[in-house]
Length: 314
Image (cartoon, rainbow, N blue to C red):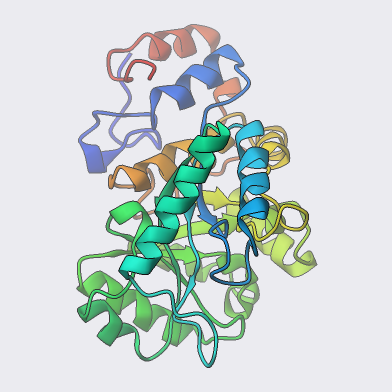
């Protein structure tokens, strides 16, 4: 069985070479496995550089919590370019050393977790200059740049920043758009963001209702309409907004479809690390609640699972 070119599982960006994300996604959907390895693309685990982890001890506890829940890779994303006296965390030798020290500490403690460099860039009118001067750390050294805004920022300014980023050959990753007032008022605007190639990253706390009712309602609406590429912890401490991803994974699987966690927590996040295009890079993917592997005839599922189009397990 071959997938039709208009199937939501057909990835036009990779010429159909990987029709269904990665093998982990398809394998677990068919076999009922406990879940794939997870990649957390937004986490404030780097100690002492922002309002996240205050110490190496807290960072190690956050790392243990993430690894225990199935996370294998974290992109450490300290706040960058915050206005006023907030942390700047531009690319520098000292910041690279901080990433290295954290990885060395994890290795010394035997915590099976890989740390990748990143940043959560606060968008200001200075963004074009910072981009031109290459002062901003992308996610894992890829083309993907994680950006955030004031919660009451105008949609017009957000979209201008996205244009500035794309004009320079990078791909904007919108951090927690469900928390922005403009998106909460009109979540349909994210359909346009999708068409323009903006990557949408939801927060764990929003999906689980820990960041307010409006953020949760917006996040669930976006999931219902297939308007999300990835979900991440946005963790700051080992006790509040933590790195543990188990409840998010089970909630996505139970409330939407068995496919959902593999798309948002492994397939697309891993593509960011590998600097590959997203599945659903330029259009809504599907309604995650409506389209599930569980709805497919078992014979068809077995046929697809055996297809040479799907990469073998890692």
